[in-house]
Amino acid sequence: MKISEILKNKKVTLSFEIFPPKKQEAFESVKQTALTLSALKPDFISITYGAGGSTQSNTSDLAKTVQDSGTVSLAHLTCVRSSKESLLQTIQLLKQKKIENVLALRGDLPKDAFEGENLFPSGLFHASDLTELLKEHDFCVGGACYPEGHPESTNRDADIQNLKHKVESGVDFLTTQMIFDNDMLYSFLYRLQSAGIHVPVIAGIMPVTSASQVSRMVDLSNAYIPRKLLSFCDRFRHDNEAMKQAGIAYATDQIIDLISNGVRGIHIYTMNKPEIAEAIVKNIDSIIKAVNRREN
Ligand code: FAD
Image (cartoon, rainbow, N blue to C red; front, side):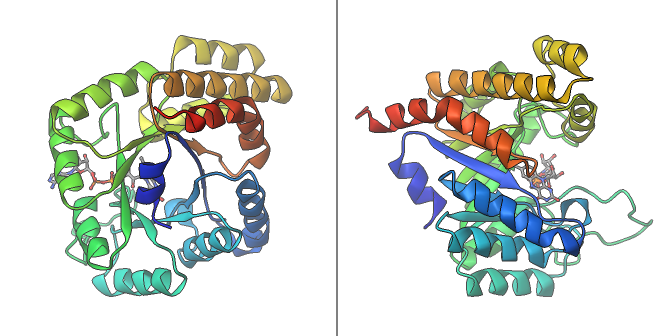
């Protein structure tokens, strides 16, 4: 099923992200993670692509595993450092596996690029170019967005104009970079409306369950970390169970606030930890069911 259909028919959706293993030996264990998450009955599960050196065919294999277990899957795909031929091969692979949804990404510019390297041999320079290609093959296409601005963009207005172009290229829905302060998302949503961007926006939530995660996340995403989150990391950094409990409570609180304020899609960056996703689902499943039961 296409995710655009799910988003049209449900008032609130809940989805998860997983990443394929870096080493092939770990594939079976990630497959188990995917199955455990699928048993929680999310609206879809997304599988990242290429990030962190994983084998790229693992993305479509995991997407198929998810789909075969009865949950809709969303395969990520990046165009940086890819030839047109390899992108078309991946598209064929996804078609063979009956994957209907793709998150079109440019990908991060590689840190090990050599001087003069052509990083875009396919001639697709932005996620919007990849979106056009995927649309020619009839996929439902998602795109990434950055409530606090993409790290490379000169200013937020330029970033929103580029996002508008990406949506006009055929993106059906957007998923945000992880956010820890909901107000960042609310003001971003307001700016999207003003810019005439009306596709559904799914909020990315990363439960923080270890203190070391925080510095890594700031490096990766530039996200603003509220004082409340920093305080519990500071207080409980040496106690894994306390950190987990606080991280689950913080993410739960964020999600309840988002749903209460009318946000219609919640995407949990699970970090391949199904027990964390499970604990959050337990905290919010009655809320999601209640909203989806309501007629307006
Ligand atoms: P784009 O939309 O192409 O934007 C990149 C930059 O270019 C932005 O600054 C934008 O403003 C600018 N830009 C866009 N279009 C134009 C234009 N026409 N002219 C000039 N400038 C333009 N990375 C992975 O490697 N694998 C993954 O699986 C993965 N999954 C992700 C999932 C989500 C939800 C998110 C938020 C990010 C993910 N990433 C992933 C990271 C992502 O690849 C990086 O953030 C990357 O730097 C940008 O990708 P993008 O698709 O947003 O690029």
